[in-house]
Length: 173
Figure 1 (cartoon, one colour):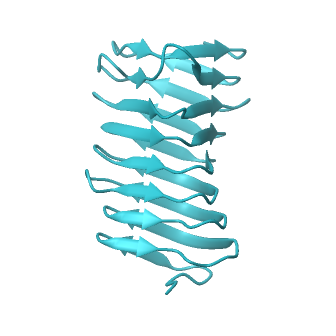
Figure 2: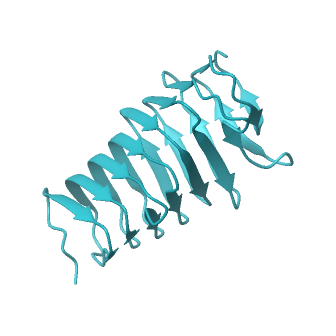
């Protein structure tokens, strides 16, 4: 069944399938297991994703305010992934097949890496900020044959980490 109603906060360390066919809003999700968002849109005020088993899949669009994205975890599927608040990336994470629209502030810390897999794309939107303070050799890593990062906002690169992705810049870098 579907454990989600409107509101609420959830912690998942196992397997959780959202089967609702309607758009839903929940307060917070802490996920270190497999979470299938299903096909309907999901809005979260806060999302924490961590661990090598921390996976989000499904075709529904996901929108979150705050995002804490930790080492080893993956956001996959075919829907849009939108962040509107503060995002902290603290390890090697994977965006798999989704388009990430950022309208907030993303900060890549320490030795963090964002790997773009299977056509994944990042759009750093107008008025958004992306800060790379990572020392990783692959702070942003994707295909060299297709654009992986569109910047219409502000892109700051203060760390020593490498950018191994095709960037289309119409903003400030």
